[in-house]
Length: 187
Image (tube, rainbow, N blue to C red; front, top):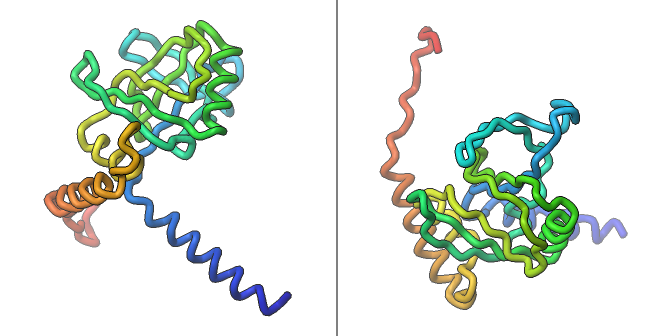
């Protein structure tokens, strides 16, 4: 048993290294509307722009980027970009349960921690396709292309990912580097 331990540790380290090499750091979270009486341990206040409203959402997301296996972008009416996300089996099940149980409630999509859009749960979603109607920026589209295949073009994903990673690398090079502050200067 002891002779297998080093091999197990080595394989775990290589898995951890592979996880750290994720090509992008985009976060996509779908949060359910909460109840203010649940307390700040479970909900957080957010300000929605469309519809203009102050509400609370649950801190624990229904769906996260870990549940996504593909996406399909489209132009949104507000000038941003929207996406359909294909979910894995776990994400499909969570979305189905929520849309069956909580009709006529809001869900809020957060992209990299900012409110992207709010949507009303109108019907049961059983096909595992989660819409986010707006809120994505062009750079985030490149990050999505580096991480997920476009629905219907899964075979082209290696080339898509290669191009997106090259573009992200180029953008990072062009960003100004932060200037160090002197030791005696106040921040």
